[in-house]
Image 1 (tube, one colour):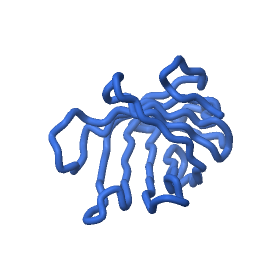
Image 2: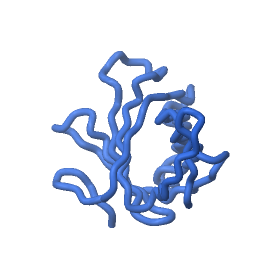
Image 3: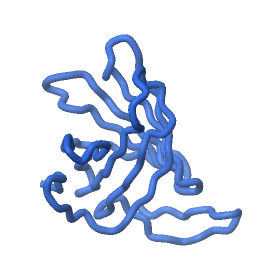
Length: 140
């Protein structure tokens, strides 16, 4: 998918493809019940329907997952990404909205807690490449 990004009202043409990119973000705004540090993630888009996320909040206890995602362009420069984590074992779902104009990321974490869905937001950055060093999980 090719996006045309708007920066300060001017069109900036860039071939921005999710595949082959690593996104870094933190949920600095969230309604989680604890007051711990904001969760930080590195997410690699391996191909048109597979991503790998790594929770890097605490380098001593990195967790990760491989997910099959769906991508929707809501409008130029705004993408929505969604997936269901481990559909055979739970009903957790994740929806992200990436705004390439502001580099804001907004999300809903569904069924992580049986009583409430969590609303989250923060900023993101991205870079080319999906290579990783252990203990991070890379693309399959």
